[in-house]
Length: 212
Image (cartoon, rainbow, N blue to C red; front, side, top):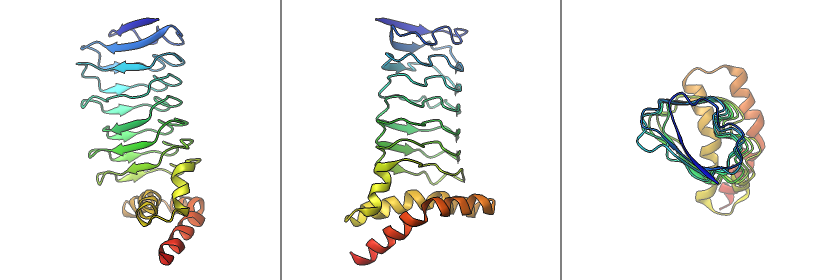
């Protein structure tokens, strides 16, 4: 198995390599290129080290085996599908904008923390992550897309919980995007779509809360 140091200008030269298990980003790298390590299925460790990277490109780490990642404080953008279909279990996101489908189908993901400074979460960002059970919003989030939690089964299961705190946490995860859209004068069709997608779960949760 191979460990590599990702150098400035490497682009996507390692795309699809099955022998790579570990990557360390060189200190002068400012961007992990589009599709840089896409389909490197045996890649389990990805370390930014002392890098001051500001961007992870579209599909850069898609379909890798990474289980954890510490995003550098200098990071400004994560591209579409950049971390989708990885083996991430927990993640703290500190970028201003989370692009659409960034964490799509991360089936091992259980906890997501949006840190202060995140302002935008685009549509489908966490769709298909069936094991997310904890999702913590940042007060700084102002814009959200729709269907953020499509097929997030574990999160939706909390709608039927007998635990008051879990139900409240679940309701917050559903209603926060709606409140953000309303506060930012979002389009009525987007607001309606969120309500349509989640109305049944919201009603079940409210009914259970009234019975506790």
